[in-house]
Amino acid sequence: MAFNPDGTLLASGSGDKTIKVWNVSTSECLRTLTGHSGAVYSVAFSPITDNSDRQIILASGSGDTTVRIWELTTYQCQKTLYGHSNEVITVDFGEDKQTVVCASLDRTVKLWDVTTGQCLRNIEGNTDWAFPVAFSPTSPGETLAGISSDYQVRLWDLSTRECRQIYSGHQDHIWSVAFSPDGQTLASGGADCQIRLWNVNNNQCERVLTGHQDWIRAIAFHPDSKTLISGSGDGKVAIWDIATGTYETIDVPQIWSLALSQNGKYLATGSTNSQLQIWDLASKKCLHTCISDDNRAIYAVAWSSDNIILSGGVGGKIRLWDGNTGECWQVFPGHQGFIFALAVLNKGKIMASGSGDRTIKLWDLATGQCLHTLTGHSNKVCSVAFNEGGILASGSQDQSIKLWDVATGQCLHTLRIPRLYEQMNINGVTGLTPAQQETLKILGRSPFNLAFNRRIKLLNPYLSQDFYSRDIK
Image (cartoon, rainbow, N blue to C red; front, side, top):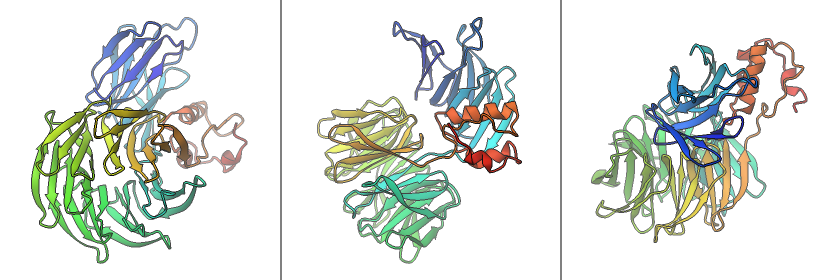
């Protein structure tokens, strides 16, 4: 969401691919803007350059990989900016009103001339976010694993709220993490097609599992702690013997998520082709193929203790399925964006859902009642995990991990990795052109908090290290 400079208008982007423009005083929806073919993740109003400036320009970034420029006097789309190869997560304007900056999951930042629609600059780098989170089962909920875009796994000590260990080795983004039930091993799967197994006692990588031909989307340990299940963009589910590194596969086209039953006998897989499938793990046979009535992609699955399977994805609804029959027997509406994460606490009594609408919802599974809606993240929530002490962790594309009290719905702490570029003041820095200074100002205040410090020399290779050590206010 974004307000215009004088606070009279509010624009909101939605998972339904539209933008709504609201009159703040009357709460009236003035217009619904259509044109995007994917969810709208970010909107931004242009600044007012002088008192005579009456033109209102809005930029929108979408999951369809485009940026649209709207003129709100006529509510018409003036330009559609093409160039990104993945979802556009954030947009913002420069102070001159002529430049819009956008950041994408393709790991680039682009600067555009609003008037001409030309791309002025393409900055390649790593956008920082925290995606998957997992609690250790053997340290009474005091150790949390989280991921950031520097391809590292971080272990957080929740008693001190400090990062106590960093695991390095992946060559691309990490998309999934899981602790073994005995707490001795942490598995991480990434876009480098590898699964790394970390010994949490000596902090060494003991084995690298290779065999997938595309990025690892989901992993889960079997209750015996000896077997690992992984799902990949190559359309395969692999069942690994972690002692030997050998594996068997199941074909699951377009798989995105997976979950094991608590007894380890059954596997649930969710796919972008809208199929929820239930598998017998021993025989590798599909027992049920479940398709929701709206035929939407499934991004998250979880298994409760009473053999109920939960699924969520495009459409913002959570469905409860009977694991024995494959029948859908309950639907929870509520989210305004895609559902990317599900987790279950207290033997299936409470469920958490994380969404592209930037919220987490806590549900009573018996009644279907929403107990709390947790707000505070500024970007989509892509991972949730419970510990047995009633703490929920959520990982978001806003680069933070938040810890919540399940009973009260209050945010207890926010974990973030310090970044050198935050709150930078480049006044007095030499060697930058005005355009480069404007770029840094935009990036420094972007809600996406781009990890730009590592790529700053793309703008000027002659900048000295003094740039990083200045008194930044």
